Structures are given as structure tokens and as C-alpha cells.
Length: 253
Image 1: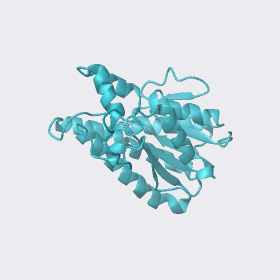
Image 2: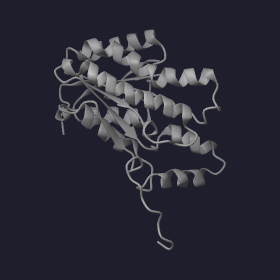
Image 3: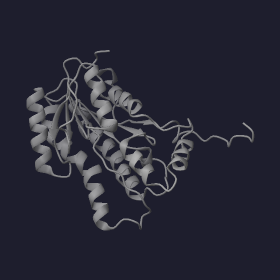
């Protein structure tokens, strides 16, 4: 498939995990892709790396401008940069709440704000935000993270309404627990990493973690001109975690 031929894409947090998988897939399907990341030096070709800190407006504005210049425009923006947080509502102090909200929510605001003038010149403009099943399902020990992703879901819908008459589509993907470097680090810190992984696997009805490539495929669909009538949508890629309610397995099965 070369449905992105001639299109230019910017992916934040694109140096690893879901962002790198999405950037690679868009490039494979014909797009010219710029990756914005805190550490973009090791980004593989043909991806173009640009250093950006999404918590700093000047950094974002400069990186988006540089990427648009190198690509000669922007047609697709994938707002993927984000960080995790663990704990109940009382386990993180105000500084940590501000830090995670600054990256996960305001990072999207800053990058979109910088990219809009370029997207308005595109014949096929699309924005895809990486949200989470945590926006729609109550998960233990994820109060701060869930709050940021709930805000991302609401922001996605508001942005879709604001820009639909400009022809700019805005959607998000809601991954379940994905097999990414952040989850790997979380498991490494667990008292029993194998047991913790088994618990995460079991939480999703399909019985395994979501892969970065599976989330990337959903991002590519939402970003593609083939999805020209899709806007204001949250696409779950969660192994059935949000929508399915299965009976407990019978003993011996």
C-alpha cells in the first residue's frame, strides 16, 4: 500500500515504542516522515529526526517549523509523545500532576497549535492523538495518567468540532496495555515481573498485551485519506478490554 504517497507526516515521541512503529509504517506506505523527540539522534532512515521537548513551547514551535521546512509542508500530525504515572489520587504531589499533564495534554496543544497553519494548506489534513483505554475504563493505580488521557479524549472531540469545517480531521487511538519500553520499565520494577506481566495479559480479554505495530496500524488508518469521513472518533486497540465483559473461565478449561 502506498496510500500516503506525496504526503508529509510529523510524529511526536517517534523515537521508540508506538511512535516509532507509526512513523515507520507511514514511511513504508509512502509518506515523508519527521520524528519529534527528546532524543531523535538515533532515528532510522528514511525518518528525519528533530529534537523537541513537548513541554516547552519554544522548542515545539522551532521543531515543527524545521520539520515543515524539511518536508515542505505537513499533512498528518500524530500527537504521540507522552509519559506514564503510577498511583492513586494521593500518591503524586502537585509537581508531578503538573509535569504529566504538561507533557500528555499540553504537549498536544503546543504541537497542534504550531502545526495548524501547515495543515490548513494540505489537501488531506489529519491529526491523530494517542489516547488510552485509561480514558474510558477505571484502572487501578492510574489516577494521574487516566486524568491526562481523559482530557486527551475530550480535547480530541473538541478539536474535531473546531476544525471539521476547515477539512481537518481529528481522531484518537485508545490502546490497551501495550508492550512498550515504558511498560517494560514498569515490569522491571515489580517485585515479581513475570507475575505482573501475567496479570496485565489477563486484564485484556485476548489474553496478551497490545503490540506497538497494532496501534500503529490504527493510527495509519485514521491518518489515511481513505478515512476521509472519519473524524471525532476514538478507535480502541485494546484486545477487547473496554467493550467486552467475559464470564470467568470454567474450572479445568
